[in-house]
Amino acid sequence: MRPGAAGTGWRRAALGAVILLAALLPARAAEEPIEIFDAHLHYNWEPKPYYALDEVLALFKKNRVTGILATSRPNTGTHALVEAKAEGLWVVPFLRPYRVRPDIQTWFNDPAIFDLIEQEYRRGYYRGIGEFHLSGQAAASPWVKKTVDFAVKHDLYLHAHADDVAIDILMRHNPRARIIWAHTGFGLAPARVAEMLATYPQLWGELSYRSGITGEGGRLTPEWRDLFARYPDRFLLGSDTWIAERWASYGDIIAGYRGWLKQLPPETAAKIAHGNARRLFAGQ
Picture (tube, rainbow, N blue to C red):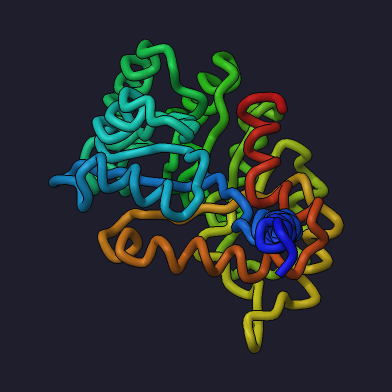
């Protein structure tokens, strides 16, 4: 063996390893799962949270959830998420008009709930009101109108779990309202969803529990592929962790979204996954 041949061979092997590593790094980076903004999250404290705060924050990090629209019943859970100031997590707090679960059925006729809204708002960090539940003509309540007008006055979004009739009424209360439509009508026909989005430019659909998006083999249905192509700026994702089972399956919920996001053009997928939320809540 020539003097120095062993050293030369080692250097060549090392150089080859560096080149190989450099070639692999972009591929690995490309495989990193798309970041998700969870635009329908409940950290309920009634009667107690399912996970401790540090467990919740670890769950977000594990699933690359980089932002949350945070609500809770009562609002104590939202306070905790805001005050945690977790690194890498953007918390957008919404004021929920509930103290206990039965308020779901009565809040829209209860003046004490409007007092709650006014008092909680004084914390100074809320970006919206909701999620709240409304069906049909219940939305015509004068207390609901006061809530809509309060939101418009203070530049707040509304997060409405509502049918299309209630959405129409909310928009009639004040045409300047900005509404995130929880579940986008559940099983409402895609054609009607498209009609609502066309009618109300300040309506965005949040997709938790929304049926019909995928069909056999997890493939996007033609109707929803068309909706996402026509309205890429109008949809958000959410987990809706309203019960313990939703927390237990959180990773599966997020993975399910990523499954069909991969079937969309990358620009559209990024908007729905996190871009639309950033544009709405931070003007990005």
